[in-house]
Length: 232
Picture 1 (tube, rainbow, N blue to C red):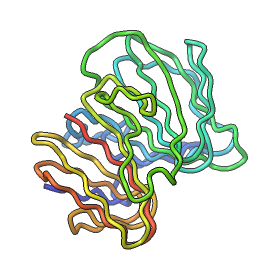
Picture 2: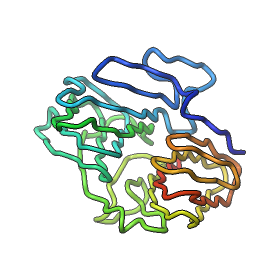
Picture 3: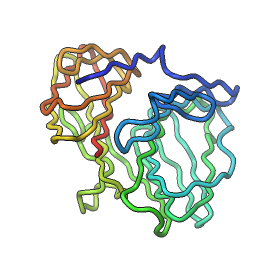
């Protein structure tokens, strides 16, 4: 089963400094039939105006992955962490027992990003934050794991969830395969370009909710950038 989620049908919120689209129910956009996909609770497509951002606020018991598409985002939190994550790179915050953080676009251009929330396997635990670069050239023609609750590798950001976040960049005409385990949920978004997933066309920033499709083939109809979450 693959359900197409066109960008122009997503939930909307425009606060002036923030123009957001919601793939799942979030804030004032409420759809009781669209509260998440497996352990994936939130997928927001955010455009943040220059010199603006999210003021300090609190989270607990959520794994929050930020995938920066253009521009950069600057993070500060109550643990004393501070960092700037640029386009193509990823940051992860495990909210754990509780953390306050702010996310600010200190750039002279609009920052665009995906913010993805995944429910953790266990509540509580010490909060943490981390970020690392993921050069798009390393993802050329293949999926690379960006964040995971499985792999114990230095080049993968750890999350406390039964989930994996992967990304790929494809030239027009290229394809890449992904094997989805039984009972798993996948959510995929074309961050850039136009793609097909098992023959279903996705325009830029469209989403696809996938289940009971063990073998996925993603083909680029034009140069494309793809982000996929595989979760319980």
